[in-house]
Image (tube, rainbow, N blue to C red; front, side):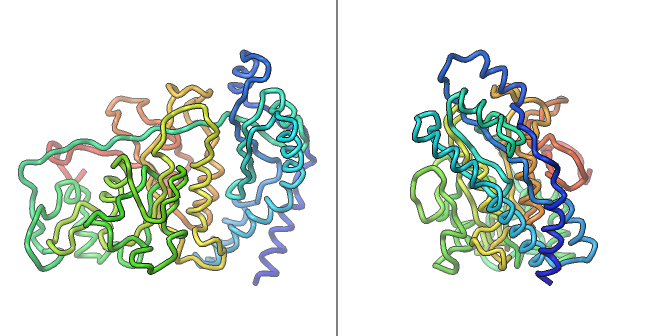
Length: 389
């Protein structure tokens, strides 16, 4: 099977068009032209050669490949493309480091790209390379804060999640989305599934979450269950802001002893990354790409899939107020997101709490290429609106 699969991959790669010089995104080019000589920029450099993920995905879907086979095929194709095409630019960037024109860089395989921190002159020279497709500005993201919804009396679960003393029961929002029917009539509680979030981290000691962290009590290596990209060197989930813990609670939080739940998939396990717990700025920032590459293959083995989350929730976005040449439906993250999804991990997005007016959704949640790709979810106050909707 692998010989057939890689024969297909090599065939697709052989169809690549003759390379031409890359381009600089117009918004970035404008900023560079306005800046003084020697000004440093953090940019994303997309290489011309990209793995044929859409074609492979269609082929795998047509023959109804398993999730494990799909994951292995896509991840190996992404890694092979990067390995075959990145060395020349790496050598160039190393030369830039020695000359003092490049201040740092990181290469990735989740999409064939580099994040580069360099002078504007060096960026212009990199963009002129034949193996470069596009150079665009890097950026940092902003949280979508949760709604503060205080309910005087919350309905209890009439069926009971677990035996034991009662607490808050099931919240109105879960009734509003018909979650109890999914749990008690269809049997979908999250059991056997793995969820994740890309946020400010998660409080691994939280009683509603701690026992279902995938690395709890050494069940699995912490390196494939928690990713700290902020320099804290932590080996256990932490959340210094609180937002990510709130989001993970919405995903799978449950008081199993008391029968309470605020989470939809209250029997799922979880993993997390804290890349969003940082401010907006122009620093060299590639943490979000790092997170997506990790989510696509947390244990670093394309041949395993139990470590790969079924879904990653994202409650963050950028908008036109963040500078860096952002426009509506900004496409700079699409390849990274699509490749993570192709490897077997669905991404879901909070549409944002800035509504209900039009044009209030940031990016990437504002993308809508299909009914399921980059799936965005809005919210209502379940205590003041009729439901089901």
